[in-house]
Structures are given as structure tokens and as C-alpha cells.
Image (cartoon, rainbow, N blue to C red; front, side, top):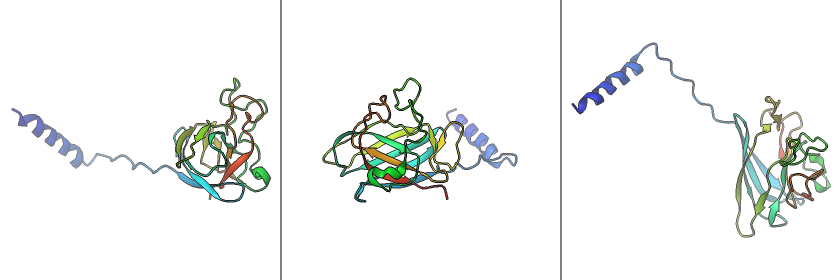
Length: 186
């Protein structure tokens, strides 16, 4: 009696596999990924980030070391894929800049480029993971998600201080201390 369920499962399983009308599901495509390098104002690498597309935004794994300060730092997506100029001015404003809308705690909602703060320790290379639901790695907007890889790309910028996530225009985040170019889509 104990072999009957096993034999029945084996027989039924064989029917699905050998059934000529069975259509296999399409293969699952690997998510789009992008690896970027963060440099300080002197062009020295202070880490990098791996970004990958999800159905509802971009997931990011950030590794940093050698920042000019420890403790809490703000991080934002900026509107241009350019880390040139004093204080990385070429990166422009936050992605999706809208006066009065800065900060994850803003009652009117955040700017597209707003991200949570992260804390950099003194003795190791920290790895942080964060989710950015308002952006896409694509070259064009996906619904309400803004493209990081549009015609001029964008930048990932680390600031010297934490972002209070509410005050205008940048939440007291301070100077830009590291920048990575997110290039336009090929």
C-alpha cells in the first residue's frame, strides 16, 4: 500500500513530461545589473555599488571605505551622469528635483533621487543594501519610475552629513564627498 502513492505520482509526472501538448514556461531572464565606482574629490576610489532592476524599482548593494568622515551620510541619485567640477557640481540637483519636495519624511512625498542615510564605520568596508522604488535602470520612465540611464545618465552622490529627510533643499546633507557616474543606456 505504501508504494501506491509513489507509483501514482511517478505515472502522473510522466504524463506531463511526455505530453505533446505541454508547453514549458519561458526561461526567467536575469535582471539588468550595473556596477559603478564611487570616487572622492581627488579621483580615489572609495567603493562602488551594484544596482539591479526589480519589477518595482532598483535594488542597490553599496560598498564603501575611506570616506572623509565616519558616521551617518546622505546618499542621493542626482540628475546628470557627470562627477566633474568642484563639489561634483556636474551631477546637478537631485533626480526629480521639485522645490519643497525633498526628503523621505516630506508630507508631499520625496524627490525621486532621495534615499535613506547609511552609517560608515571606521574599521571595515561596510556593505549596505537599499531599495529605490522611484527609479528604473532603463533609458525611459517605467510608469512613475524615473530613468537612471536616460540620454545623459545620472549620478550616485554621497554627502558629508546625514540627511534629515525633511528640511529644504537637501536636508542638511552638506558637501558632496563621493560620486559615481551612472552612464546612459548603450
